[in-house]
Amino acid sequence: MKKTLIAMAVAGVVAAPVQADIGGSLGMGILSGDVVDQVYGILVLNMNNEVMTDSGMTVYGNLSLSYDSPEPGNFNGAFAFTGLVVGIKGDFGNVHIGDGGSGVHLAQFAGDRFDVSQGGRYRHAIGYTGNFGGITVRATQDPNDGGPAATTDEDYTTFGIKGTFAGVEVGFGQEDEDTTIGARYGMGDWSFAVHSTEWDDATIPVSGSDDSSIALKVGWSGGMVSASFQTEELNDRTKSQIDAAYNLGGGAAVKLRIRMDDVDSGEYTRLLLTVGF
View (spheres, rainbow, N blue to C red):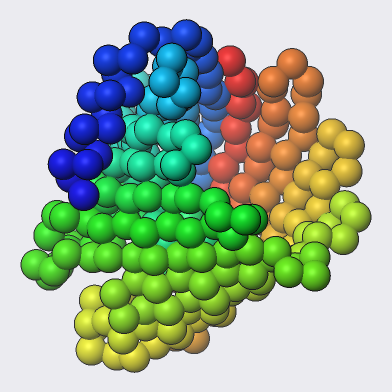
């Protein structure tokens, strides 16, 4: 698979580009963590670039990073990569390296892939995503040691599939011995989603245990305002999240996130002003 990916990458780069698009978003704001009772100044940057080639393929890349400092105006903070992916897409599908999403994400309709839901946190995977008659499939492999917990020497392989039937979007994801199933339904301005994960893994989330979780999400969007509430139950621990956004126009928006968690270290409030470019 690696040889095929390299060959496709070379072919895409060699072909003369006919169109290039660069875009992204920048977010600036504050985050308050309940544990340390401290306010952080934060910066969130997302950049993407797509280059169309004469061959009909598109070479693309996406970079996401964040920066936080102990308090607004204090720049003695640290940068952290939250996502990095490069790939090639065309009629054949999408071949990617990096954080292109795992198969499990096709079924995690009620989760926030980097925050709330367990599993599927692969940052160095090689993967393929394709659409066949309205059915989306994805397969990935993490060739590095370990998976989300990075405590074993195993390679991690994931597979996912999703489609829409009778107006309901359904998905299935398999990650090693872990299984996720989910469904999502939209009705006017409202959307409703649920997914459940069962795993037999000595590293997630409690050593030596067979566990399961269930997540629910309700979303609403009307005009310039959108909001959602999601919650996940795991081992008698409940993690919930409220998100709200107001569109200011011109690619700008104000976004609020309130995280509630039975474990105090998981709670925070974040307020962001984001601008697209």
